[in-house]
Length: 362
Image 1 (tube, rainbow, N blue to C red):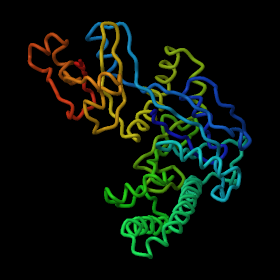
Image 2: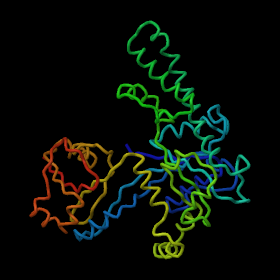
Image 3: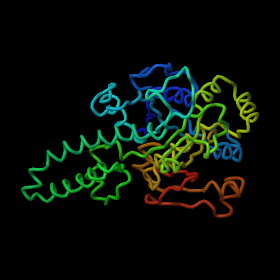
Image 4: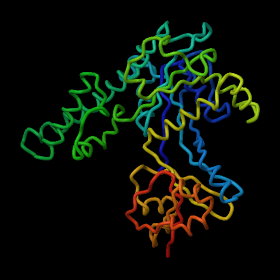
């Protein structure tokens, strides 16, 4: 199953513009009025990866196949979305289907693009979105709590455990604490997982800035933003990045250099999204190409084999593993083999980011 990230924010925050910039084509309709997007726009985005080019160069291969992430442009939420306002129920259901969230909020000023609240206050924008997610989850929890209350009161041990877990999360949500920030045991997580809570999803915050603030604004000059947001914050000028997508690669590089940027801000955003999904990358090679494979951190060699082909997992014999670092140091597979840097691993070997793997199977 492909992992996906939903782009969420208030109307006119720049969601569809950011989506177009990521996709490098104007797929999503953008306009200055709210609710331009109704049905979600879906795009597959390549993950920037300098290691791919290096592996290709060392092994003298013809091409690279990068890892990808699915991004989904979701319509703007408004205050009262949890009650169905602004097609809120529909849009919240779209958020429920993604694995993680990019919460984009507006820092740019443009008199031609109105702000739904009448003024640019990022702290309020962020709190509005999070509050709607919290209130929607509280409705979900309360419904489930009422379903099992009778069983729990009758002494059913499983129902009592479930009831206590749901009440625990609900109590934190009442205090405006996201369920992802609640300390839960392994058993408690099992109870919560089927509910697919919105506030359980990891969040990457994106400040949509003006081109004039590039490469990024001074923190001291920013409007008030919640402190916890800075732990996971990327600055992007969505309009600027969308316009760059119309240029050739050489022109983009030259223009970015002229304003003091080494690379597109989208690279940091995509890598942040990759990390948000708790993904790492391993590589496989053929005579012609090297391919990057995204996989959940903590995955076994058996699972990695199955990601490539189900037969690789069914008939798994071993995985021959060479780290990216050792390949670079040895400057080739043959030299790496001579130095004893390629290691045979079994099914339970835990994949490390940068592993270059050859699977042997029956």
